[in-house]
Every structure is written in C-alpha cells, then in structure tokens.
Image 1 (cartoon, rainbow, N blue to C red):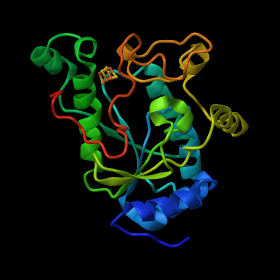
Image 2: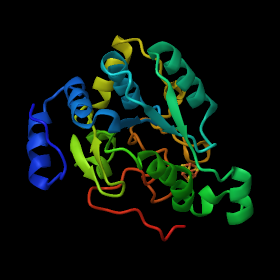
Image 3: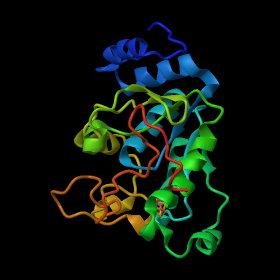
Image 4: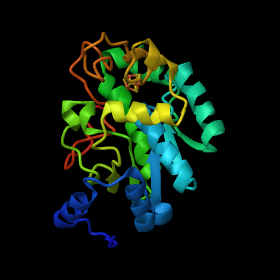
Amino acid sequence: MELVTAPWDHSALRDINVQFEHASPREILLWGQETFGDDLIMATGFGPSGIVLMDFVSKIQPQIPILYLDTDLLFPETHTLRRELEERLGLSFQRHATELSLKAQEATYGPKLWKRNPDQCCLMRKVRPLQEALKNKRAWITGIRRDHSKARAHIQVVEWDDPYGVVKLNPLAYWGNDEVWSYIQLNDLPYNILHDEGYPSIGCVPCTRSVPPGESMRAGRWRGREKLECGIHKPVGSKHSEAAE
Ligand code: SF4
C-alpha cells in the first residue's frame, strides 16, 4: 500500500479508509508501523478488543509500546489481567497516570468527585495523562468498535484525532462482539474474569456496574447518568473542553 504522510487531509483519509474497510487488523497494524515507525503507540483499557489487538501486536510488532491509564481506581481483576498478558504475550505496559493522588483530589475537589462531576474526574485522571502520553507521538492504536455504542457507530479505521493532534487507528472498527470473543477463545487468550459476572465493559470501580442481559455493552458505565464516554475518544473534529477543570 502507498505510504501517506502528513498533512492528513480528508481525501487522503477517505482513500485509506476505502482500502481498509475489509482489511485485517494485521494489515492495518503493519501499515501503521510502516507509516509512523517509533511514533506509533497503542492504548488499552484491557477490554476484549484490546486483548485481540495485543495478540496481533505481540505476533507481528511486539516493539510497539502499549500504554494504559491507571486512574488508581481500576478493579484488582484488571491489574491481574495486565500481569497475565505481560506473561502470556511477552508485552510490557507503560503506565500513565495523573500526579494527583486520590487523597489530594479529595482535599481539593471534595469527596467522590466521580459522583458529583465525573467529567472533571475523567479529565484529570484519564484525558490529561493520555494527552501527555501522546505528546511526542504521531499516531495511536485503539480497540474501539462501531458496535460498542451509538456514539461510536461511525468511527473509521483511520481518523485524524484533533484533540490530540495525532492519527488514530481503529483496526477493529468493523469487528463484532461475537468475532472478538471467538478470537479470544480460539487463541486461548486471558480476559477479565468480571466479563463472566455480567460486566461487558469495565472501567473504574465507582463508575462500573454489571448489566442485565439484553442491555447495551456500555450500559454499565456511569449508569444512571447521561455520560457515555470518559472523554478520551472524542468524535472526530471536536476538542477537549477545559470548562470541566
Ligand atoms: S471513570 Fe469514574 S472514577 Fe474513573 S476517572 Fe472517570 S469519573 Fe473518575
């Protein structure tokens, strides 16, 4: 495939996405590495899609760094899974986190900020650390998919991620939930045991609930609120708001 370099105008992205609509994650990852070299990084929240992508990365480009955002509020099961993935796939993860401890957050913003102003809490504990991690990169890889939610229904395989000023690769954009879980089972990959207890999507402890059968995959995130996203995956063309700080 022809190499495309910045500037990433709309027509260049459109052409790439037409070519990638039926491409395998392997092809997309190889293109990413060829195009961005050391300026490419993957981010994961250790969900099922991320596990599939990490398996691809470990087999074809284990040198791609993989970052995770440690909010200090992740489930212990998520940390266990990270250690299992390190051992099983030979990956080493980069931890990125705010310097603001939970104690300092409480002292400054009051107790349980996630209940009163989850956007501000996510901005400080997730979005800002990710911005810092992507500062010297040209592209990042994510596991988001079109079937995750309405808000993600129109994502492209390759996008210009304006809030971070980098290209975003979503190699599993067109995969479905069954396809992801078949891949995990077929390759005997570890996954978060909370998925077997009714948690289809897992984030921070205070903002994640189990979901009754039949509800959407992300229905347990910030349950009872209008909030659907932590803010790290903004729609194309939007900017991060400073108002929540
Ligand atoms: S998911 Fe909840 S606890 Fe985690 S950073 Fe966002 S608001 Fe805070």
